[in-house]
Structures are given as C-alpha cells and as structure tokens.
Length: 178
Image 1 (cartoon, rainbow, N blue to C red):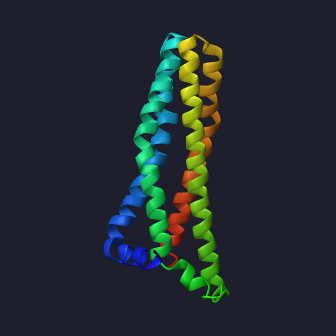
Image 2 (cartoon, one colour):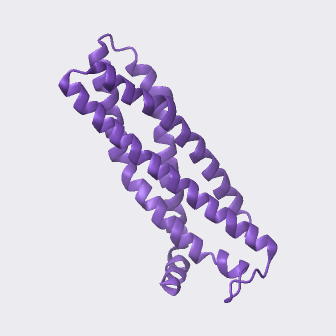
Image 3 (cartoon, one colour):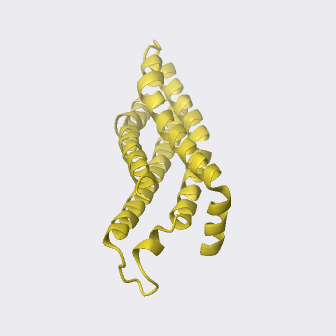
C-alpha cells in the first residue's frame, strides 16, 4: 500500500496537491462565506420562521457542497503524507528517530491531519444539529430549532474556520519544509 501511494504521488503530484488545496479552499471558504455573508443577508428576512428555514436550507446546501471536498481533502492528505516520505525521513525501520528536524516535521503532519479530522467530526455534528433543527421546525418548535442552528453558527462554524485557517497555515509551512 505504501509503495502504491509513493507511485501515485510521484505520478500525480500536481493533481493531488491541487485537489487538496482546492478542497481546503472550498471547505473553509464556504464556511467563511456562510458565516459572514449569507448569515448577514438571511438575518434580514422578516419572519422568524422563514429566517430559520432559510438558515437551515443554506446550511444543508453548504454541507452537500463541502462533503465531497472533505473526503477528497482527507484522501489527498494521506497520499501526500506517505508520498512525500515524511516518516521515512524521520524514523528508521525500527522506529528510531534518525533526524530530529524531520521528526518535528513529521509530527506537524500528524497535527495537520488531526485538525482536519477534528473539523470533519465537527462538520458531522453540524449536520446532525441542522437535521435536528429541520425536524423541530416541522413540529413547529422554533425555540429549540433556533437553539440548534445557533449552536452551529455561533460556535461550530467559527471553530472550524479557526481550525481550517490553522491547518492551511500548517500546510504552507510543511510545503516549504521539504
């Protein structure tokens, strides 16, 4: 499997890096656009019920758009982590550290992968709370629906934006590290 990823990355390096970067841009950029552009516009809707329905619908569309990019991002991250040989530069076959700087870089790769996985988990939570809000709206419980949507917009999206910006920074750092 490792050899296959080396070859895959060697043969399609530019395409894999492009898919990884564009996936990060769509995911993080989509959340920024939702939080700072769409949300502001939606808040102008007069009826509280229609406003909640618009927010839920907009989030649903965002989640449909970003989900394939999240999957692509994670797959390309693994291919790049293996294909760039971070582990091989850091440790030998017996797992002994052979280069402290390379080990530091290798640990940053894991940190970046961990951030993306935490963001994916947070995204799954957002999807769950949005679906729950939709069900509550259908039952006419706007108070609980609003609480579920507020949790997404006031906490979960900003956390993912901050984590995403951090992961992108780490990606730029790692790109220049080898």
